[in-house]
Image (cartoon, rainbow, N blue to C red):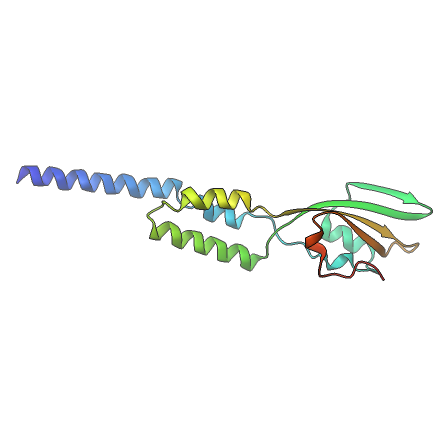
Length: 151
């Protein structure tokens, strides 16, 4: 009988340790999913948009100069994910953690590390009124496919 109690005690200790480890290690993929960069509204790159709106959405340009009296900016940013997409990913990771008793973290955490958004660089040429005239994708052109970048 005492041998049985020792086994139960050892099993209970192992469960407590496992639950503790899941509590400490678990959720890394969940946290990473929620902390991914947000999605930028690249529709501000449509022809005719004022420069101020572009800067408000994409941040300060990494380079700016005047060419023949018109301004040209280069922006670099990470095109991230919508709030809904980030929430759905976090929910999935949380459910997978519970279903696998935390083993999902072996897959989920590296997956979230790799899926950290798309790097985008664009060159924006403005007209005399500082409104977008043309946009040239320097990197990450896929992020700009749905917008008309020339008049």
